[in-house]
Amino acid sequence: QVQLVESGGGLVQPGGSLTLSCAASGSIFGFVAMAWYRQAPEKQRDLVALITRPGRTNYADSVKGRFTISRDSAKTTVYLQMNGLKPDDTAVYYCNADTGDSVYWGQGTQVTVSS
Image (cartoon, rainbow, N blue to C red):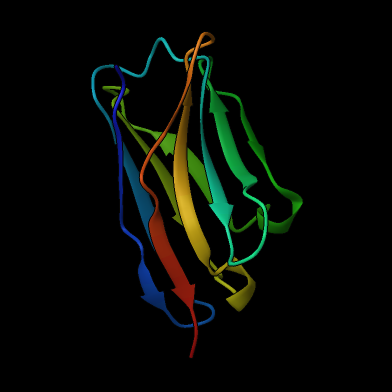
């Protein structure tokens, strides 16, 4: 059983930065991919950023150039560095892990961008 615990959300002013962390129980090296999704009120959950096992990354067009997904050398934590935050980035952010056989989700962390 995999457990994912997100942290790092909060309230930030437009233009500010936040870093989200996702700590996985056990090594995440074997995962096919790890990703961050977000869901705003009354909207669907959308992919924000993804990192594959070889380390390839992919981003939603809306966050390209502003957000960076990475993982630590121990491969137990995935990060989402968010710069130049906009009010439209306000959402609950969820960590996602794909083992190839199963998909796991964290509990989510709220990010609010407001002045």
